[in-house]
Length: 248
Ligand SMILES: [Zn+2]
Image (cartoon, rainbow, N blue to C red; front, side, top):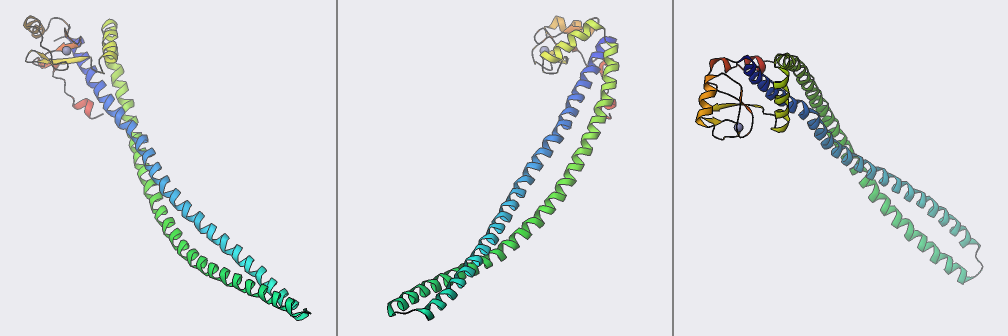
């Protein structure tokens, strides 16, 4: 059994585990961003409704102001009516007073409509705010869980990095250089098992003579097609238990 090959197999398993942990670790912030975006949508809806409520209140205040003005105008018209000298003037002021009355009535209707609308909007805003508070509580809870998990993944990655470093220290520098190159060039897989004469990663046949050499276990070999380092799992020494790595 070749010690260097055993190291490479271990190194590959560690890299696999590292990539798996990294994916989980990176998933957390992505999920948090998604949840926050979803929450912001509801927050926006609540804000819009609240603005609508404020605008209705402002409009109602403006109408009340307008009504005060109209009532003042009406009083002045009444005074002028007493002071008129001619019949023509009298009729003109009466006409003005009728117009003012109509305007008052129109504004009073609008004011009542707005009061109903304000009441309805107040209820809707209260419901949306309640819903939003519940959503905020759920969001905070989910974020706390994801952040805690993220911390756990980070701790596991740190532990794995120590083990990874130990394995790297045991591989001779030339071999390590080739392996690291393969990790980059070959989608993170530098070592492959050969089963039934086929490279497990690129699925190409290994020439029978090469397969016999591999089983002899005398030298480190590379796949003639994908250049990954090969091992034959039929050798007991290469059946590295994944348990140690899995428990990290
Ligand atoms: Zn191959």
